[in-house]
Amino acid sequence: MATEILMPALSPTMEEGTLAKWLVKEGDEVKAGDILAEIETDKATMEFEAVDEGKIGKILIAEGSAGVKVNTPIALLLEEGESADAVAAPAAKAEAKPEAPKAEAATAAAPAPAAPKGADGNRVFASPLARRIAAEKGIDLAGVAGSGPHGRIVKADVEGAKPGAAKPAAAASAPAAAAPAKAAAPAAGPSAETILKMYADRETTEVALDGMRRTIAARLTEAKQTIPHFYLRKSAKLDELMKFRAMLNKQLESRGVKLSVNDFIIKACALALQEVPDANAVWAGDRILKLKPSDVAVAVAIEGGLFTPVLKDAQQKTLSALSAEMKDLANRAKTKKLAPHEYQGGSFAISNLGMFGIENFDAVINPPHGAILAVGAGIQTPVVENGEVVIRNVMSMTLSVDHRVIDGALGAQLLDAIVKHLENPMGMLA
Image (cartoon, rainbow, N blue to C red; front, side, top):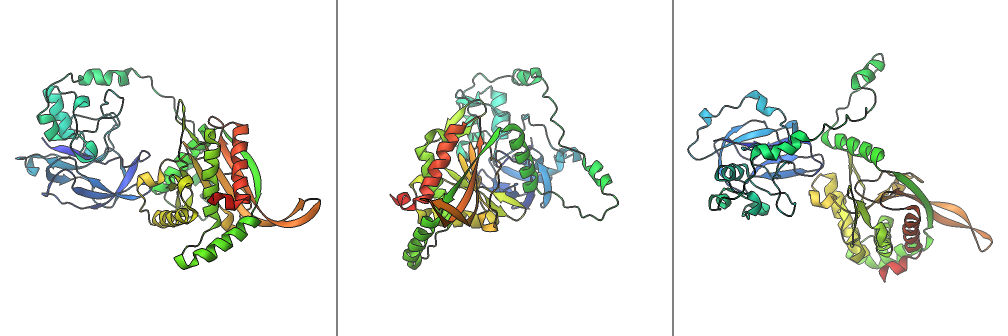
């Protein structure tokens, strides 16, 4: 029986993608691990692997197709002896599928949302063919070890497994059927039709939303509606940092290293998170997760949107190492070549608009982070020191804080620690 290959969810936030390029054609034999296609998500272009062997019987979605919903059938995989002529692929197959998996679920790089779970509560990764065989033989997939890519259970794993207590399909779906319907989402403002009518007599140009812009709009709307933001503001005097940076850059010139002010800010935040560990945390729905390492995300503007690549274990890295890693991540972000693990995670983020001359602003927290630091430009400012007015290079910063994770006093401690490191930069090398 033919198996549907579904549009995979290549990241936790992916809802749809673009089938950029097919790397196989109808009639090709494939095996687990073969690359089938290149798929553009809202953030990157990624390769999509097969998890079962078989023959590509029919391609349902042409390459270049945009807005393909996750779990939409994109091709059919034939088992040995099957013919493509006997396979019917109605037009309705190109429509988005409900999230509940069927027995002939897709060959996909990520499992369907309702995949079975093991005793530890973790999702069981299994290919559609393996699930069908398991259902026929009464095998509980939770007790089967997978030998496929990334530990996925494949056909060979279940063929030799002993029958166990497989949960009947009706019983598995019962909780979902009994679940009450969710309340309708709040209105997001006037409809597109209403807005178009409002400006019908004006000259306009419509700009279609790509996947990245749609995701940014959805995530930031969600963040502002669900996260109780509050804001803390403090300025740092950068005179010592600028002198220290100039000295280090002169010494590092022969190595081709040039440190930016942003490199020092990353390091200061990483060290501050270690000194105020209760603030190194994220909101996890019904609990708070405290991180031990300082994984600091940094906003990078690209055409049509932004990325927040994460510098992991930033507290352990030298300024030159952070500088090199940040340059690499930023360059690959601009060409959408980052892998999901490079822009997901972290507990804290930095958004620096100082290079654009912005003096101060309030940033929106990127969930599940506990806070984000908005950094403005260094400005020559009169400052009173020891009863005298002197001119200092002063940089304004605003810490946006999730009040569910960090209270006011704790946030103040964190911001104070960041400022102290920036005003005493030599200590960051200790």
